[in-house]
Length: 526
Image (cartoon, rainbow, N blue to C red):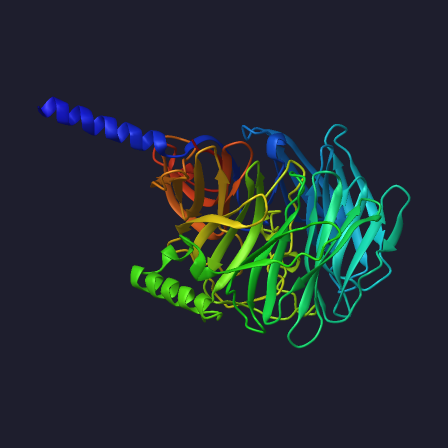
């Protein structure tokens, strides 16, 4: 009998271990206190790029470092290049042949931009000066077919600038620079086009969304108006990327001029039709509120239902931020996170809470395309939450995956509670992916990795906790900087996690026992 009990215990322990994410590879680089932090460029099936400024100067120029890793985290390239010291990092992008690094002069002369293009095959850099000739407050950046698009504001009015790298010409796209408008999204599609979403305030109580789709040379392909019902205000909006034939816009909304999200919306764009978005309150979602106490959840859902029956909106709102849209054969999936202490405000281009002007420590200030969500060519630092006013400290509360049908209607939602993380500024801290039969959430806190998997059919949920795997069996984790760290979906069923650690080895000589490292671990989920 005792043997049988031991057998079942070992079997359960084996199943628990198997269900945890597997950490198959690790990259380490010695970190000194004087070193700048790395920006990680997700190259998907091509690996990862690591970029940082250095503190070395030569003839008035600053040295920058670029490292390329393969999918097994083996180092392939370690190269340096020089940029005038008056320029600082402003963004990055990549395609099948190049990594693009954007730099902006840091004396607030916003029309001075440089682009460094690294070619994978020739291993050479090419440099461009982007002469916009206008005082553009930069918020968005990307490269398509040797054309650079820049999104931002001139005198509080949205503007899109297109720079042709072939002949060094620049054009300002028409149809922008309109008062009472806000630039919500600029996003590349998988077919070599890009979308722009703006919101125009028409009067005190009404507004409209506009979707404009362009090819890489600036020819407009779609120009759609999407009316917003009176009394509702769109806070955030992101688009899908035309992996499907249809294009979805989704995000958050509020009542009139309120500063927190009351719910989510979605609209499937139908060319030639003024389609009105669909709106749902947070209390209508199935699992979204699960980070709250059950009594609170029941109250919000009951009050929301009563409000709908009486044609009213229940007064419950919070800080919800969308990050990316997955596209599947069954429809669309929105990944979003809920935070404490964030409030939306009207865009002030002179005071961007903007990842382009914050730390380059993690790739999520992309709003991944999110950056999120993503094809092999879509991952650049991206302005998500550019109209959010951050408190000194933000606490992520939960991560949500919201499912929409092929017609853009709400189907279901899943969520994962986030524990004990505090961050100094708004950034994405979780990621997720959809497999054939389950939804996977994952996030990292200090040296622990948390994953929650939910079976889509029976809603059975399993959550695992594991430690970041170290390089050597005799290594011990001593400390981790919780500011410059994160986890992101990579390719297939793989994630990567990164951070800065203090590690002690029990068997090395005394003067080598403790080391400070920057690390990346590859994680595979089942």
